[in-house]
Image 1: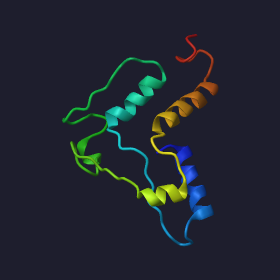
Image 2: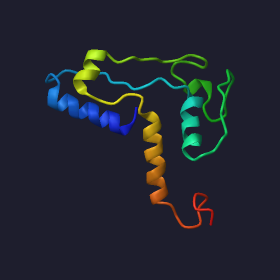
Image 3: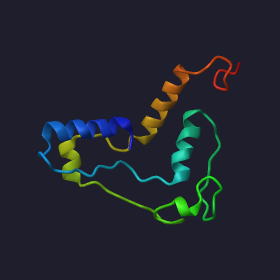
Length: 115
């Protein structure tokens, strides 16, 4: 979920939500490969990661709550999402915004500046 969508959901809950009620919010379901590919796409790198059903040295199976090869999927209640008024399918925009923010704080001579 992007920061923008989460902020919109919080604002919607404060303005239109029922006092004391908890709202479960969500955006889109992505595999780790799909999520990481958003970063490659945002920097213009044509590399495409693929999902594999094997142990990974950075994301070992024991760190995955759902277990390797399984998914945790959540579809927010349509009426609650409409009440809160937050954007969905906004993860790619969040990645692009994070990259833009990073570029504005880069150090001269970094890999992003080619010099």
